Length: 258
Image (cartoon, rainbow, N blue to C red; front, side, top):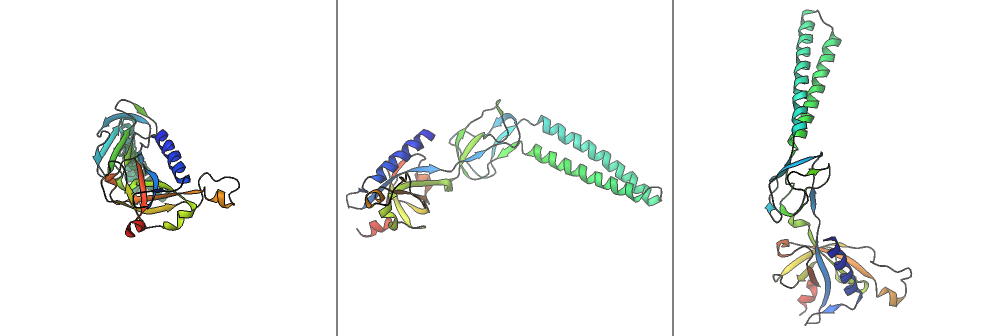
């Protein structure tokens, strides 16, 4: 995927550096590709993958189970903190009774109360760590790739799988400096490609402030014509596109003049 993106970037930049392409109606067409901002789902702590509830290509909803890790250490930690809390509670109960009868001091009571609160906090923390050994989908999306399988060890922070929410897909394309005025944030462009459904539209969400591959001296008219700027657009129908797919982009305004 990384190699394909590099090739697509070079091809798109080369196409943009050349004179703008034209369709049969003479409208400018800019070459680009579909890219995605993947969500990498990783565990909080190192562990062994026990179960995997999804496969590559599966569509999941937010909150759906994805995978679980072994939880022996976390279970033991919870049990230890439960025992500690029980002891601290018993100590607090005795201190409270002694204060009521006048046999104990206020300081002993306060110390016992603080110890109970600290034990409760440690127990809550360990219970949270235990619960997070079961990992759920953070958003609706499609499983793109699985990096670890059941039985394999995964380090803290290393993704077990990647998820693609529909809204994280975008079309990237380059336009020459002279054509920048044709595009503005929020405007709609037409997307087409081989095998794509007709009528795909996308709204411009990003326009680069600086040119790609800027040479050291760019101020002559000849050199300025070679500058290209990256533009990104997001479609309301991302299900019609595929990551890595080469596409052609044209301004809607050009279509209206046909």
